[in-house]
Image 1 (cartoon, helix red, strand yellow):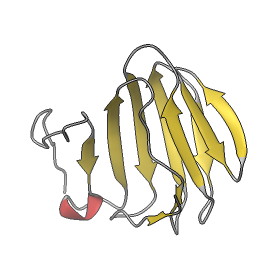
Image 2 (spheres, helix red, strand yellow; image 1 turned 90 degrees about the vertical axis):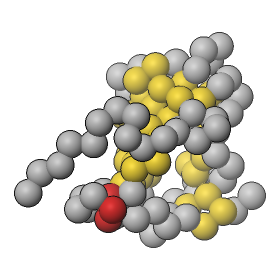
Image 3 (cartoon, helix red, strand yellow; image 1 turned 90 degrees about the horizontal axis):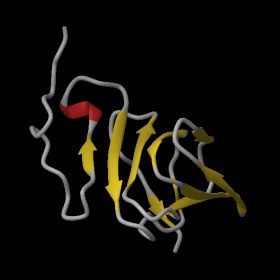
Image 4 (tube, helix red, strand yellow; image 1 turned 120 degrees about the vertical axis):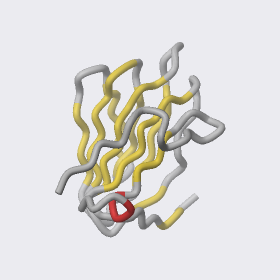
Length: 112
């Protein structure tokens, strides 16, 4: 089995993020394709699975388990299951980042 989801088939949110829910497409992973403004990003939350980010453009400040780290284009950031985390666009341009969820559907507990 294979499937190609063409650009534009999944409409972005008002903020510019595309949400891919794997179970809707026969995939074991889900992801956000983030295209966000400076200062934007999710508040503190956690998942029952790991999350991996690939920064493609701009800069993001990640906080995981209370520790901050800045990531730039080409960097990969990983947090384990149940790790409280968040990130914000700290650049002057739109943040282009892929947020990969090791799950066929998104499961999130908001902490802030």
